[in-house]
Structure formats: C-alpha cells, structure tokens
Image 1 (tube, one colour):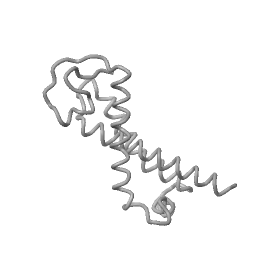
Image 2 (tube, rainbow, N blue to C red):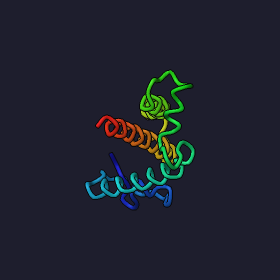
Image 3 (cartoon, rainbow, N blue to C red):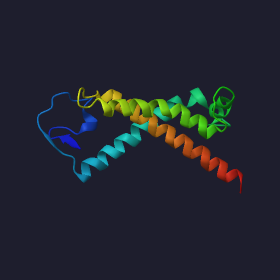
Length: 131
C-alpha cells in the first residue's frame, strides 16, 4: 500500500495536489483506521433511519425476509452487502485499466464494513436471545 508524502491517503478529498508516493507506515495506517471508523460510523448513523426504528434497529432486515430468498435477517443483510462486495471485486479486477476514485472506494468499502457490523449485531442479538 502506498501513501502520499505531502498528505495522507484519507485526506485526498481535501487536498488534490499530490507530490510523491511513499509506503504507508504504522502510524499512517492507524490514522487511516481512525478515519475509516469515523467515516463509516457517520454513514451508519445517518442511514440508520432508513432501516431501523427506536425499538428495533434490525427491523428492515427482518421485514426483508418476506421479499428475499433468504430465511434469516442475517441472510438478508448478507444479500444487501453482496452488491457492495461485487462492486469491490469489480474495482480490483479493473485496477490494471483504471484507478478508482477515492469517493468510490470510500463508499463501497464503507458500505461493506457497515453491513458486516449490522450482521454481527444481528448475530449477537440472536445469541443473546438464546441465553
């Protein structure tokens, strides 16, 4: 992985003038990790109103069972996430032809991360219900 001498890769959307590429070090990776968590948390919290209510944050995944081929809310979450995974696969497949935009990478990886967090939450909810 490479980062930029004048700016970090997670700052690209604020500073488009790039000078020289260097390998990402541990401190830069930790900063990157913090930026990813901050960005994905913001998106997850803002979109939560689209699929949740005050008493059940997984409501739409449970309701999705009726229109999905999946039999569990976790399966519905996986199904929703799969389109983002396919998009990431396409990005990687086409790297030799095209470098993706930072916005596209942030969106697709952020959405996939958030679906994993949601699915993990549903699994933990299920585990808690069985105890």
